[in-house]
Image 1 (tube, rainbow, N blue to C red):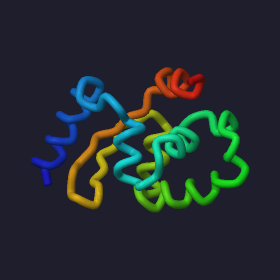
Image 2 (cartoon, helix red, strand yellow):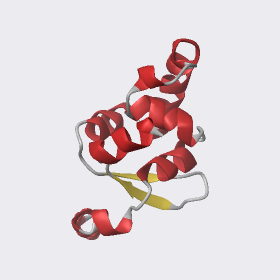
Image 3 (cartoon, helix red, strand yellow):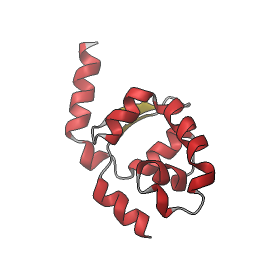
Image 4 (cartoon, rainbow, N blue to C red):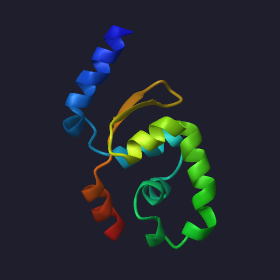
Length: 104
C-alpha cells in the first residue's frame, strides 16, 4: 500500500510532463468521444448538442471515473484512472488548455 501511494505521489510530481492529452486519456477510460469529454469538463454551452446529450454523457462519465474522482478532477487535482485493458492514466485538467480547445 505504501509503495502504491509513493508511486502515485511520484506520478503526480511529474504529471505535467507525463500527461500531454488529459481529454484523450479521459476519453479512453470513459468510452466517450473527446468532444463529449470536453463538453463535460469545459464550457458545455459551446456545444450545440449540449441540451440533448449532457445528462446521459455526464452519468456515463461519473460512472466510469467515480463521483469522488470526478469532484477532485473538477477541483483541479490529479487523479489516477485505469481503463478496461488495465492501462493506468494520471489525469489533471488545465483550465487554460480546455478553454483554448473550446474555441476551436
